[in-house]
Image (cartoon, rainbow, N blue to C red; front, side, top):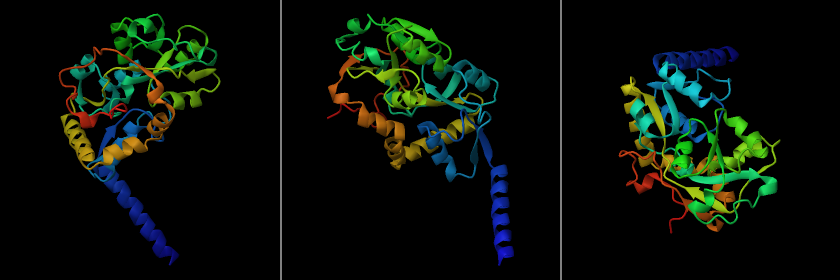
Length: 285
């Protein structure tokens, strides 16, 4: 009996290896054990598709810097990456025009030092906000947006460095997408930082999957699979089930915040702003 069970298990394992070898690897950024929404979506669309499987060439190496990630994409080491969009990205890569976070990236909360919890309390207009300096990544699309709107910005290449820089007073606040700050404050609890309670900065900020130009086959697969996931309702279910999204909607107190509208220079003619179902609007009645 034990022998039969062992042979059955061996056969199943061998079949799994054969199936994996016969499928095509899609090389992606990040680590296999990270529970981010982009990775959840990719796992969902490849789970029952024998044609592709996910491969993590930098698994266990931590987050690559933005510049390193883009270099690896250009070198052909990564097939798909995900990022907030801008015109240059859409020119250099094949964008899948389905906003992964349904616009949450453009709903920005400010992280501030705990002893400056009320630093933005009296901000009511963009002109008010322009009196304060933000911190942001050197190569981020958000940085382009902030500067475009006349907001002073201190730029930094390495993302983790922005937290001690904020605590040390190098700038006044660190704007983060709605779903991001609580996870990050949990990750770096050594800094005396808090989510500021008074304002929300809003601008259109599509966050897409991008595929290398040379890989039209994967582009078609990803586009079709994500549209099917949306049509089935599974995309929306996974969006609201994401722990960072759920935590943000529970803790952000959006109804109590003053909304500061910014214009976005990163919107291209292909941005699907006319497809309301692709975007989440917490202020919609």
